[in-house]
Amino acid sequence: MFGIGGGELVFILFIVLMLFGSDKVPEIARTMGKAMAQLKNATNDIKSEIQKGAEANGLDSNSLNSITGNINAQINDAKTNILGDSNNLTSNLLGDTATEIDKVKEDIDSISGPVKRQM
Image 1 (spheres, rainbow, N blue to C red):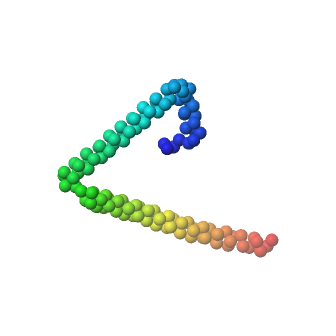
Image 2: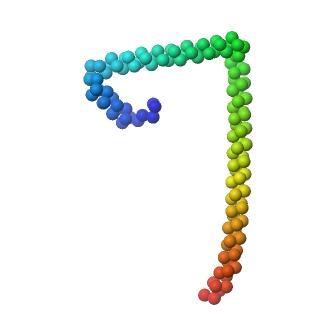
Image 3: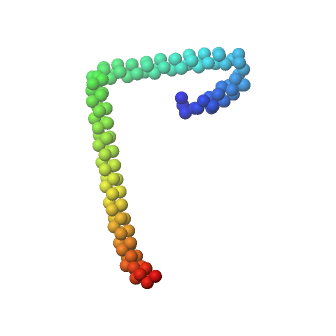
C-alpha cells in the first residue's frame, strides 16, 4: 500500500490522532472514504467515455488488442536486438581479455621458469 509499512502506518495514525483528536478521526475517515469512492466513479466514467469514443471512431477492443500486440512485439524485438548486441560485445570482450591474460601468463612463465628451476 503505497510503500508504507505497518510501523509507519501506526505512526501516521498516532500523529493524526494527536492532531485531530479521537472524536474527529471517524469523521475524517468517512470523508476520505467518500472521496475515494467519488474518485473511483470518476475514473470509471472517464474509461467508459474513452471506450465509447473509440467505438464511435471504429476502434473496437479487438483492433485495440491487435495494435497493442503489435507495439509489444516491436518493443520485444528491439529489446532482443539490443540485448543480443550487448551479449555479443560482452562475449567478444571476455574472449579478447582471456587471450591477452593467457599471453601474459605465458610470458611470465617463460621469464620465471629458469628462476624457479634454480631455487
